Structure formats: C-alpha cells, structure tokens
Image (cartoon, rainbow, N blue to C red; front, top):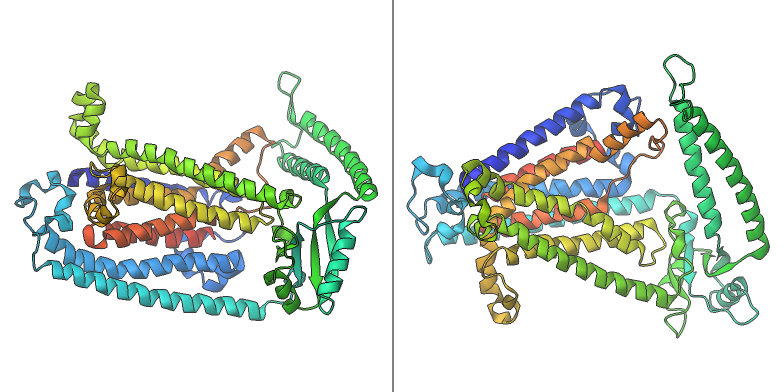
Length: 569
C-alpha cells in the first residue's frame, strides 16, 4: 500500500467520525430523540457530551453499570497508558530509523505520497545493522512497561472487587446452590429425593429447597402479555396534535382498531394465564433441578466444590444465578443433552471460522492490485485510475471485513444460548470467549496467512519453520491492519449514533405502534466489545517493532473508545 492510499483512508474515516459525532451532538438535544440517546436520564441537563464524559467519576460509572462497567473502562485506561509509551518509542525513535534505512530503495522525498508504507517498517533496515539494537531495546522497554501496568491494574481491580464483596449485603443467592441431574426412584418425587439427600450428607448446613417446575407455556404467555401491555402504553402515549383521535386510513385501518385489537388479545391472554396457573398447580410437573439453600456461605461452597456422587452425571451443583439473571429454558435438559449441544456448537464454531477464512482470503486479495487485476481482468482500465485504486486498496477491504464481522457476535451469542446455560451472564461470558477465539483466528491469523503468497497451509507441515515463516508473513500485512484500525474509528464512533436504535425509533414514530420499550435502557454488549478491544491491543503490540506507524492510529482508537464508552455507560 502506498502512502497516498493510507492518507485517503485516514481522511475518509476521520471525516465520517467527525460527522457521526456531530450528528449525535445535534440529535441528542432534540426532544424526539431523547428516548434513543438518554433513556436512563431523560430529564437530565444536556451538557456537551465530551466534557461530561471527562468529568464523570468512577463512582458514577459504578452506579450506572456496576463493577463490570468500571473494569471495561479500565481496559481503555490501561491500553492508553501502554500505547502512549509505545507511541513515544515507536514514532519518536523506531520510525525515523526505519525511514532512513536503505534496505528497500533510496528515499525520494519529492515523491513520498507514492512510496510504500513499508518504508516506515523494519523491513527498510539493513540485515545485521547495528540500528536493530534500538528495536530490541524498545521491545524490552515496552514489555517492562506493560507488565508493570498489568500488575498495577490487577491490584487495583482486585481491591475494587474485594471492596464490593465486603460492603455488599448478604443475599439469598449467596447461600443457595443449583442442583441438576437429580436421580429419582420410581414412585418418588424430586422434592423428596433432594430433601433426603441433603439431610443425610449436609445435615448441619442444609436449610431448605425449591424444586423447579415445568412452566414454559406459562412463561410464554406472560411474555406475550408484557409485550402487548408495552405496545398499548406506547400507542396511548402518542397524542394527536388536535387532541382528537386520528382518522382511519381508507376508513378501515386506524389506531383505534389497534387499541381494541390489543385489548382483546390481552383479555384472552389473561384468561389463558389463569387456566395455565391452575393446571400447573394441579399437575406440579417437576424438573430434575432444584435450588437448595444452606445456613451459611461455607455450607453452600462445600456443596458446590465437592462432588456429590460417584456418578459425575448426577447431583451436579453450581452457583445459583441472581434472580434477575436466570435463563429458564434449559433447566430441564439432561447431562447428555448439554454435552451433545456443546459438541454441536463447537463444530459449528469451527465451521464458521473456516468460512470466514475464505472471506478473509478474498478481502486480502483486494489489497494487492496485481492479484485483483488477475482475478478481474475486465476491470483493469478502471483500476488504473488513481482514486479508484486508492479506495480499493486502502479503504474497501477493511470496510468489508468490519461489515461481515459485525454479524458474528449475534451468531456466537446464539451458539452460547444453545449450550444449556442457566444464566444470562453465563451466556454472555461464553459468547465473549467464542468471540475472542474467533477474532484472533479469523481476523488476525486468517488475514496474516491468506494475505501472503507464503501464507499457505503448508506453513503448519513443518513446525520448525513456523517462526521463520511467520516472521515473513506477519510484517507483510502491516498495511492492511493499519487501515483496519483506521476504519475502526468510524465503527466505534457509530456507537454514539446508535444507528439501529435510531432507525427503529424513526420507524416507530411513523408506525405509531412500534416504539421500543423505553423503560429498559440498552445494556453494554460486553461479549462483542471486549474481544474487539483486545484485538487492537494485540495488533498494536505485534506491530510495535515491525511497523510502528500503526501506533498513533491505535492510540487514537483507544482515546475515542475511552470517551465514547464513558458517555454511553
């Protein structure tokens, strides 16, 4: 990639970032969009968001998003500190040394825009040059800085976590254990089996238990009733300017019809709920799972961490989730069903990564004009236009990769949901781990291995050659990852405008019956954001020595993320 193509990408993304920030600043002050941009504090004074995000204290973040929000912001604080030090070393010392080298070609300052960005990489330093000691020294320095800051952050967050446990009041879930795969004898009940087992083996600490019952149909009816109540409230909240009910379209369709329709459906649902509740009370269809309460936290911990049976598939214990965090659909699944679902999800995740490898191979081909002309010879004349070639090689590949990657978090969350977790936080934690593996393999290694002629599958056939081959293919993709980081400016700025929520709100304003439920502000998508942040940390540290030109762009990304996510939280 040439310098002018990189400058084109930087200019486009910087303009889009400023535009998105301006749109947010303009719309957030208008009453029709308060529901989108200030659902938690609709009547709060609207001060400049950048200054407000800077002035907010850590206590404000903890009050709004809990300890998870504090730790998430501290990730950005840690990254800014590390890459500020890295940028000083990389841009101030390493990049001038690389640029003044003569390994690639003689420097022509008059034609700098048409020079390759590889001139700023270590590839331009002569093999065996004494100047490489600067690179080695910088690697040791930044490693020491990162290790010290990691220790400081670990100590700080550990103290916050300990403070949280010490100051929080005891809650019922702290003394409760979820027991699954409860064996039941013929003619017996789950409740009797639980009571007998824990009175025999935990007689001094056992307190009581509650058996889980099969009420899936009842929960679906209650969810439908809640959704209809929300729609009715939204319809009634939309007032006609004249105070009169709006006229019907073609004399047939109108809001009055919707109100009557929803009220009739709500009445029917209420009757169905009563019938289902009475049926559930009579039948008492039990599930082989129960919440068991103990007299002390020590008793609950013993029940969790000590195996309760010789058969590992029976009497399985785990922490009871918080009441608002329970995910009910998989309480009735057996051990084998959960094991099979985990295996199926594992295979599906691998297939998704393999499919994305093909996508990455195509995207990487766009960064090489010669390869693109070979694939599409009929576009040769168009590709010779300077502006077109700069857009394709410097902007289009990273945009395609960002667009396709944006759909992966929802797929990973669906996979985690299928694995049988009984808490929403467990699903999100599993989805976060899947996204992290996907990001490292499909975004980093896939682009490294598919973007170079040397990056073929034969790289794994001779393990001894892997380090030397990676030493060639990793630097070769520096220009692509630089543009990928630059494109991420626009991606993280779009978090401000909440494009999907804004479009949904506009549609709801037109349809009058599809407004979103403003009583439930959106939560932070940690399962997709944390792996993305860690990816940019990986890119910055990987290319710190190889191509220090990436460091200012990574630092700008973390600074944007720090202010934007503080504002969003």
